[in-house]
Length: 160
Image (cartoon, rainbow, N blue to C red; front, side, top):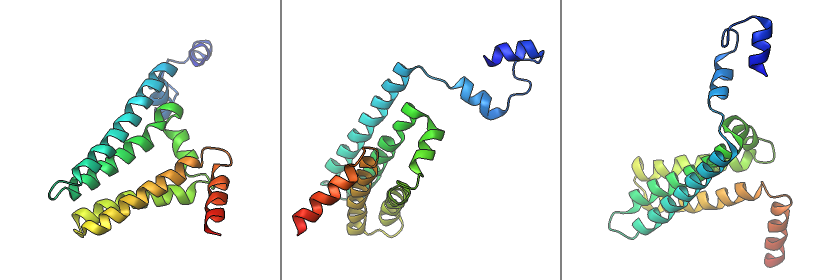
């Protein structure tokens, strides 16, 4: 439609369109391609996390565990960019209902790597990886309607 408008308006193809519009037009993928890359990215994220967990039991495997587990979570988190696009993904991540969960996930990703490489505290890195898992789970269920409420009700009924 934009090409038709540009031809009718007499302007050249990319004369007045901005850089963002050109990039978005050039990067449109078909639904099947988006779905395939989502699955590839998500499965590779899960495999990285599993590999990281397996490397934990090697001597001095804590660094590899933290790196692979964090890369796996980043791959799984970014896999949804293929389904809805990166801009929409970022907008949905920082909606008020997910803002705290998103910040906690990102903070745990960073703190895990800091604990392993800068502070060199293996126990702290494992704690941050556990927090990554919990934060990622809480973030993920925010996309399912009423799932957070159900989880809260289950835990309150178990604790009371």
